[in-house]
Length: 260
Ligand code: IPD
Ligand code: CA
Ligand code: CA
Image 1: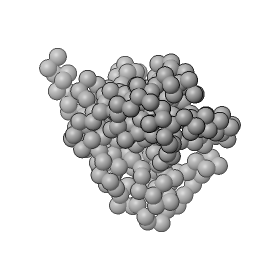
Image 2: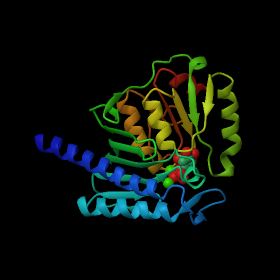
Image 3: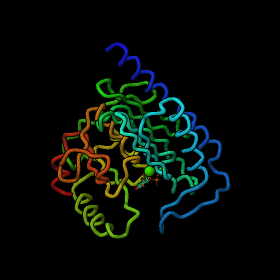
């Protein structure tokens, strides 16, 4: 038992250091001229995303060679091990490319497909969010909690728009429906940080469709540990592979669900 606790603390420290290392690389290259490629019509990738990922995946493989790793830029190594790493080496590539300092390194670990460790780091603001199941969530070492807002009219919500046009109309209908009932809606461009800011109580809720496990895993661990709730849009149990997410402080969850 004691060994497991120590191993988990070591894993959290390793993950924090890895996020800082990759984040420092992103920071050093932020604002430099980039060679931007398109994975889809508006879905971008740069050599910086790839280098950041190589750095992260290489270090995980050396330290935990048996673990499964699913990383955005083409790594999908399902080893069947209890531990799965979900790696987004740069969450907020569009912001990064446009010189907007809102992006993150997002590292989530699930054990037996359940939330275990989450770390999101914005190297520009220096915000480091971290959590391990059962031990609370932290922003730069200080404990964070979700907001106590219970009325939609007082709620500030954050969202993102899908890259796929097929889901755009639905998203816009939801957007209008929700906007009529809440204080406001923001769109910042890093799903991982969006979730962390719900965890920290700045936002009261978040929803987005068509995401990937690497966008969600780390932020969901942080959110749950800060007392929040994550589910599918209709309230079904959170599954990082499902990609549609409703997240909140818990108190406004059912009201948001009704509007989804
Ligand atoms: C994107 C960001 C954005 C969200 C997109 C994601 P990327 O991730 O999280 O906030 O709206 O759906 O794909 O492509 O910058 O890693
Ligand atoms: Ca992402
Ligand atoms: Ca990314």
